[in-house]
Image (spheres, rainbow, N blue to C red):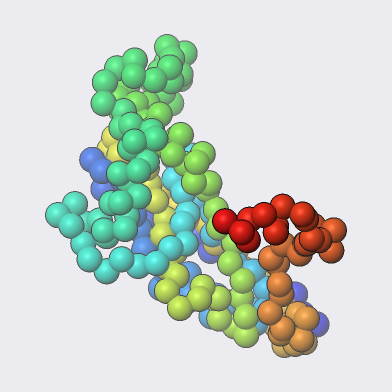
Length: 206
């Protein structure tokens, strides 16, 4: 049995002014198919602390912000939880030392550190997703798309998405667990919790 690891870096360009949702589904599928891995996993991870990876349905309809409806619905919810950074001192971050660090590493201005909303949103969403590879195909179900989200909208940014494919080039045994029978996860009451109680008769009379 041969075990393979394939890594690729996707270079992306975010537009700024509003969060950018990059649909990278086609690229991820191509990487998996070219990897030679038949059965394993695909990890899709952000290189950046203000970005996230999301697996979700494609909404198809776009608004004037070039966001799919479902993406804008999501952004609306995130703005309620974590408002856009709109004015100085709205958040504790960035402090004076962090702002000075930004200048030390040649950031174009203090405004580039006003991205606290992006950092917090990426914490909520997480920076990676791992998907299953079955028979050489990415297993996302019927409707899943892979999106790289850049929450940092203070400026246009060059971004990188890291993809790691791991697994075997061989076939696997049957994937059926429990012979494919549906597993009953509903609560099972013991006999003492189903036993007769005298008040049942009183209720019947009402």
